[in-house]
Amino acid sequence: MIKSVLITGANAGLGKEAAKQLAAKPDIEKIYLGCRNKEKAKAAQTELAASTGRNIFEILLIDVSDLNSVRQAVKRLPESIDALVMNAGGTGGRQYDQLTSDGVTNIFAVNLLGHALLTEQLIEAGKLKYAALYAGSEAARGVEEMGMKRPNLTTSSVDEFAAIANGSLFEGSQFKGNKDATDHYGSIKYMAAMWMSAMARQHPNLRFITMSPGATVGTDGFNTLPLVKQLVMKTMMRFMLLLGKVHGIETGAKRYVDGLFNSEFRSGGFYASLRGLTGVIGEQGRLFSDIDNRDFKDNAYQAVQQLISSPNLTLPSK
Ligand SMILES: NC(=O)c1ccc[n+]([C@@H]2O[C@H](COP(=O)([O-])OP(=O)(O)OC[C@H]3O[C@@H](n4cnc5c(N)ncnc54)[C@H](OP(=O)(O)O)[C@@H]3O)[C@@H](O)[C@H]2O)c1
Image 1 (cartoon, helix red, strand yellow):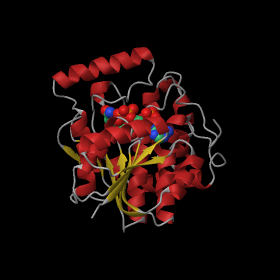
Image 2: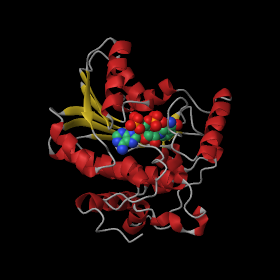
Image 3: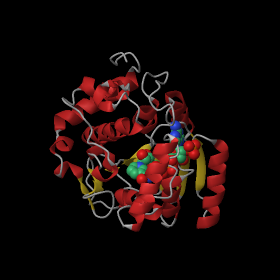
Image 4: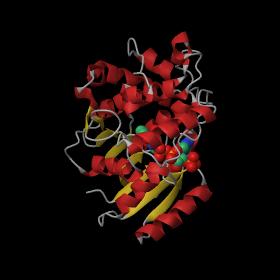
């Protein structure tokens, strides 16, 4: 039974909406809002308490792109949680491809490295009891409708996954001079889904679900893209909403809640829209054989483990 949940990136967008939907479940007794900004966290806490009529929201300050902040947050978490929702993420800000002090790109740090350490540390501390859900994306298998290509991996080796982490994979001419965060984004979400699946095998006593919220309007997700790209994406999203090809924030966040509570979702599975960016969801490993490849999953896991245990020493130089 899930009674307590920690959601990263809970002050806005899908994270905040998921907190609201979870609070509507009477069994939920505590929701930790994992946020990097205290003022924004407090504003979300107040808003959520008012809109749900429940005083079950606690703030846990955490910047998932900073490994020290992640370690401190796990120490400060006063009790174990039943479920973790790894929601913080997106296109990584304007400096998405700059390296952090841990030797990975900002976009990798916020979408994968911090969450991987968070999960490992929670497990190690005995503070994660039942389920971990990762915010995946259809970008992990390409999104024709949005002009996003499939991640362009050739070997899916440990080194190739490491090259996603430090951004060196995206320096080739096919990536137009490494100018676009969306190239990194899809590959990182792919690697995360593979890592999650390997984690499910490593920890059979816990559930690991990768769930894409699907293309969701009404979040701040595109706000850190360059202005022109932002305008293009937002206009396209509004147009697609009219055509029923994307959905609202309630539908996106409900996918997280379903992923946590519906046991039909298999631990280790990567779930996203079966077609396009909205509608019926299904296991992506059944559609794309590489997503179901056990060796590739183990390689992604190994690359992540190397980074967690020895960041910036184990990566090919950028
Ligand atoms: N929206 C979509 O269409 C869509 C589709 C597929 C997947 N997703 C995934 O869904 C997740 C949520 O997306 P969204 O659209 O709801 O994004 P959003 O509206 O931009 O919200 C992102 C949240 O993450 C927080 N965050 C960002 N960097 C952080 C960090 N380093 N540490 C802690 N929190 C951080 C933000 O906090 P601040 O306010 O402090 O910046 C904000 O609360 C992301 O992982 C995204 O990749 C979204």
